[in-house]
Length: 94
Picture 1 (cartoon, rainbow, N blue to C red):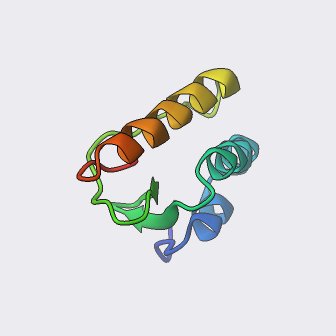
Picture 2: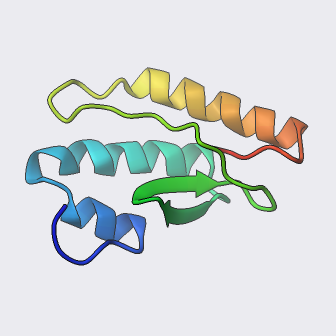
């Protein structure tokens, strides 16, 4: 992603390679549906969803643009992380 660094997830998706944008938009929709109250941020050049009142972590998921998007797996991981965060107030969503 050349040029100005994105400051929002929408900018990040627009700046991504064209072939990756459909995956990113679908991934965004899945995560937004699982964690609608999460704060959206760009940290270290990477989009993050952070549950309110929690710090961030180094854990994140990378999916190549040339592979199918594992939607069921993404949904399960996100649902589990939301559950974990809600059980432990000092943990982060991602």
